[in-house]
Structures are given as C-alpha cells and as structure tokens.
Amino acid sequence: MKKILLISIVLLFFACNSSMQNEFTATSENATDSTTQEIMEEGLKSIKTNKEQTAELSLVGEWVGVNKDKEEFTWVFMKNGKFTIIIGNSVMKDEDLANEMAGKYKITDKKVIATYKTDFSRKPGHFDIIFKANNEEFLRWKGIIEFLSENKIRFYMPAGEKDAQIRPDNFDSVATTVFTRK
Image (cartoon, rainbow, N blue to C red; front, side):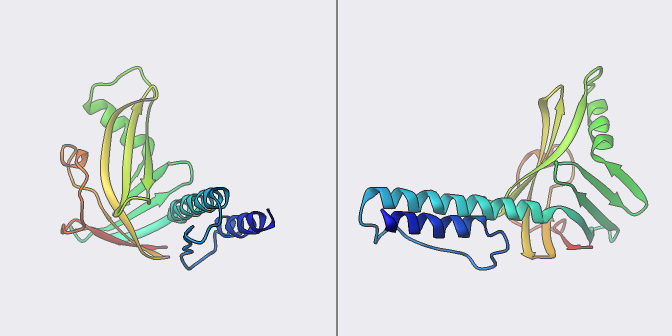
C-alpha cells in the first residue's frame, strides 16, 4: 500500500508541475499488481493532459510573423478562445470575423461567435477557428500549429473558406508562417 501511495504522489507531482521542461516517461512493466499498474497509467494520462493544457495556455499572448505577401501579421490569443488578427493596419477581432462569415452564409437574427480551439495531442497540433450561430457550429476552418520553441510557433491554415475546411497534414506550404512571441 505504501508503494502505491508513493507512486501516486510522484505521479501527482509531475502532473501538477507545469514548469517541467523535460518529458517524463514511465512504464508499468515493473508494477507488482494490477492496482499499481492502473494508478501509473492514470498518472501518465494526467501528465499528458497537463502537457497539452500547458501548450494551449502558453499560446496565449501576442505572436508576430510575416505572411507570404510580406505583410506583418499578428495573432493575439486569449485564454477563453477569443482572438484578434492584425495584418498591416487592419484589425479584426473574433466577433468581426464571425459577423463577416454570418453575412456570407446569410445568417441573421442569431448571435454569432468565432473562437479558436487547439489540440496539441495531435501531431502536428490542430488549430481550428469555429463559427457558431446560437451555439450551433456552421463553419470550421482547420489549420495546423507547432511550437518550435517556447517563443516561436509555425502555423498554417489554407487561404480561402473552402480550402480552410480541409486540414493540412504538413507545413509544406509557402503560406506556412513562423510567429514569434512579442
């Protein structure tokens, strides 16, 4: 029982330590019973989930890059899925983009929102902009994202509404942009 408790404490420590820089890997090969093995597997799932949440939270902030048209391009990501896009002198908030898409899709008399969502458990990471009217999704733009370092990401979302509905599987496009944290 003491062994199980000790393993649980160690796994909990690693799962809660969001400043952890190195990847923690453990196996349950040496587990002496099924209870110990289950505890270790649960702890490892928590660590993975914590790493993904840490990656998502570390995306929050202002990121600056240069797009394929050689214009300065800025994403400002907030914790709640809200965002602002700045290209040159043009500023577009998530609600502006949502209203523009609602107009194109002839959605009226409904509350329209746009939010971003990431999934860093995927390789490459998934980045989506989700458009909803009265909490029902009517459009999703699909991109990919990857941390190159703590302060550098690369990002690719196909241009054009139709193309953006198909997720790319690699960064082999001239439209891939590298952003640096501001």
